[in-house]
Each structure stands twice: as structure tokens, then as C-alpha cells.
Image (tube, rainbow, N blue to C red; front, side, top):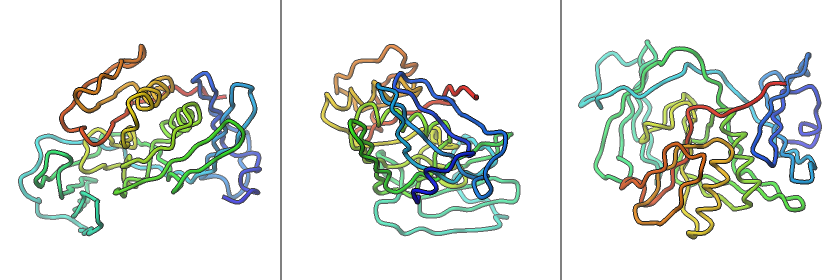
Length: 262
């Protein structure tokens, strides 16, 4: 983003506060050219404003994973896309006229190959394209996020605000294996739909605990982690569970993030 973009007023703006609260300010008139953009501002513990980024957003059909996993690809798909990207699990995607998506490829940490079916869940979701990388450094506020081995670089708009708050608060550099695709699917995951969760590498034990604490403070209340780590459950965490499929990556998610509109 150019500095002119960041300085732009009259754009829908998320204000993310040091205490874990998030507000979305909607101007009466949105500046021409910024109708499909959101600005994200972090307020540090001295209430100094840090303009982090401006991103593009898009509206999609809300989707969900449908059980059981299909054993084959149903006939009648209207498009087929193949992927052969090092480190990326997804290999083939088939799309149907009713919005159904069947994705196939390598399973997560369990090994083998799988197919996952995603269908319309009813209603719409708004997701944003996460900047690659996202880097901000000013005073005591440092944000450093990069993706690795993933094409899942879209996230729910509110979830992205919460992630910015957590990263600004903990100050740790995050390597992420992604959130969701542009269409809201999230192969090989089943709980990242519509950009509601994000995977990341582990830090040291102390820093992993610090990261989890701040993520929970900002509303990511579902955490899956490697068995035997000895992590302590934050008070506000709803699901805090060891999981054998998360030996190599940490999962933080939430169905929704609390945001107050102003």
C-alpha cells in the first residue's frame, strides 16, 4: 500500500485496541476507490495509533465442510484446477454449478491422500486478502507475518483484525501455514472455512504460550496443539486441546470475533 492509501480517510476502518477490543468505524460516505477496502489501525498501550495496512475485501458464499469425505469425484463439475506447488497439500479442485467444491490432495499430518467436500452453508461471508508478507515496525509495535507452504492467504475480515491485535501485542514473528482460499475452502483443513482459523509454526514453549494468550485475548478461543507440550489453558479459551494432527503446527480459530460497529 502506498502512503497515500494508508493516510486515506473515509474508508471503513478497524480500530484494534491494546486491551483486546475491536471496533469497526464506518464513514457516512466512503471515498471513491476505497469501496472494497478496509483499513486496520492498532492502538498501543499509550493509545498511539499505528496504521498497519489497507486490504481488499470480497464477498463470498459462506461454505461448510460436508461429511463424509467423498470416495470419488462426482461427475458434472464445471471446472477443474490442478496444483503442483512444493509444500502445498491441495493438488486438484473440482467446482460444481451449485457452489459445491471437492478438493483433493495430500492429507495434513496424518499422511495419505484425501478428498474433502465443501458446500454452501447459506448466507454470505466477507474475506480479505492478507498482505504477503505483513511487516510493520514502529516504536514498541512490531508485526511480522509471512506464509510458508500454503496458498491459503485469505482470512475473515474480523479474524484478521484479531490477528493484527495479537501479533502487535505479543511482538512475535509468525510463520503461518495459512487460513483459507479465495473461495473460503481450506484443504486439507475442515475448520478454516471462510477464513475462521489460522495455522502457524510453533515458537519456544514460553513464546508459544505468549502467542496463544494474546490470540485468545482477541477472540481466537479454539486452540489445537501438539500433545505433551505442557501449555496452560488461557481463561477465555473455549476449546484447548492436544491433538495428534497438530504435532507440526498450532491451530487458532473462532466461529466469530466480537467487533463493535461505530
